[in-house]
Length: 169
Image (tube, rainbow, N blue to C red; front, top):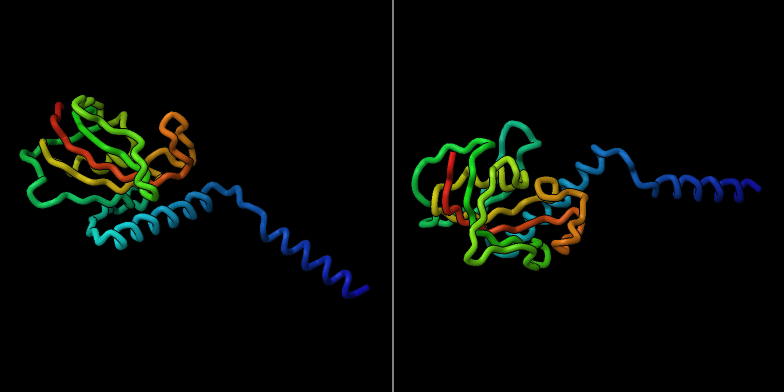
C-alpha cells in the first residue's frame, strides 16, 4: 500500500513538473535565451564576427550586426521615429536561410517607426548607401506570432541584408 501511494505521489509530482508555464516573463526570457544561442551558434559556425546593439536596457539589446569595411556608406544622418528610409533588402529565416522577403529593382520607403523593432535598432547604425547585415531575435521581429503570408513560423530568428538608399527627415 505504501509503495502504491509513493508511486502515485511520484507520478503526480512528475506530471506537475511537466506543466507548461503561462507566465509571460518566463516565456519571454526562455525564448530570448534560445534566440541568442541560435544567433551566436550561427555566427560561430559561419566564422562571422558581429557586433551587438547593446544599450543600458536589456530590452533593446540582442540584435547583432555586421557592416563590412568599405560598405559603411557616407554622411551622418540623424534618425528619428519619423525618419523615412528607402531600402533594398533580403530577409531570411536564420536557421534555414529560406528567403521570406526581398526587393529587386524596387526600393520601398518606410517610416522608421513603422518597421520591425530589429530594423529600428539596426538602420540608425547605417549611413546613406551603406549596407548592413542584421541578425534579429524573434522578440524584435514577429515574436510568437506566425506570419502565414511569409511562411514564417512563430519565434523565427531573422537574417537581413539591407542597403540604405535614402534618408529623409
